[in-house]
Image 1 (spheres, rainbow over the protein chains, first blue to last red):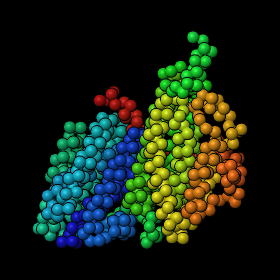
Image 2 (image 1 turned 60 degrees about the vertical axis):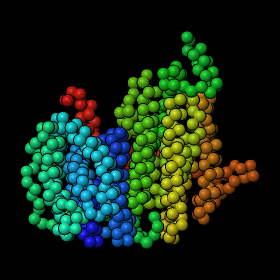
Image 3 (image 1 turned 90 degrees about the vertical axis):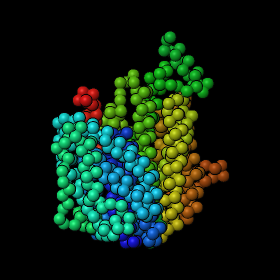
Image 4 (image 1 turned 180 degrees about the vertical axis):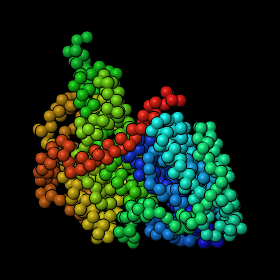
Length: 253
Length: 309
């Protein structure tokens, strides 16, 4: 059971940690001051959520949350590729966030019914914060959809780039069947696709962006992030993330 | 009313300890000096986000990462508050935040000397939050009594947040001081590098500070540069010694009257830095420009929102 739970907790924690890290790259660099403050709050929420999941894992296996966050090699990371992509421009940041937040919202609703009680309990609190993220993203998406010229081009480019990576969110890691059999995961991630598609379409179609609502879930044939295979972009990110920690993992920082 | 009478009345208000509000009559020179002070502060907050911002992605624990992120976010929030106060004060001059930011990027506006220096190690994050913010808190606390009301009010909030930053910085510094020999060496190196910029931070010796006398008379500023520097030394030198570390000045000492004596910190360097020739002034301004230019299309989109909606 532990191994199966570990996979669930790691994939969720890693999504949050890596996205939080990407969000935090905007701090001091956002398009304007008010948004700088907002994106820094999102970054803090995501990183704090990651540490909640890692703490659950600690309670389960005794592993140190910082060690898990800072010292794991790329092949031990379980985040989807979407989250490790560089921060890109503001349109990419918004679109990625919305696509992910919708996914995360669905994941949290399912995890709230997990037979692993500690997880089901923390999820309720996190749901409230994530709903704020969705509101923020939705507002931005509306603004971007109203744009013309450069803004429109950027939005379309971002939508295409994000959609390429969205299927990877639904990739299933090791032990999914067992997790479902034990009720740790009430449903398989690939079954969340229809819910996501509906939510995504519900946002995009009224904005005249129906062309970017995919029909089928086309999971890539090759393994992706949930199975520990990553892009160089993650390696680069981890180089920064763990630079100081790695200089002396035994020291107190 | 004649300007002469207004000035008399204005100075009487100041003498009675009244606060001046944005819409009140004030001498042009008062407006100019208050605006310069507030804008230097605002610019420093936004430029100050850069050296620490570099370390958000590299902070060595989850808790530190969250703390540095929250701290830099606070600094950006301070800039927002300060630019708003500055905008109100600049109404007769017709200047807005966009103008202030353009002035900053183009090198036409000043920001504190310390943010032109590199922050090459993790220890710098602690040194900045503990010592640099400590120095800022000394000057800002002294400004709580400033005669310009809107500035005094937001300084209250800023100072209370800076006090939290100090705790965060102290925690990093103490962890390194109590850590491995390499961590202690990194901290000592940080203190050595920041020492002179910290002494410079309070400004030149009082006789070389051209605006000080009038700023004090109008209670825009309350204390002299040297008074503030003394206060800082009195608070921080014992802390450095207390950690078993060195103050990088062989002549530092406190005399029987409680006055700190220190070596000449090289004022040429200070003048160079505030005239835009600090070690990283250009690079940091280039980063600020990068952020500003990168966000241009987003701001343009929002500005045209009504039109396209």
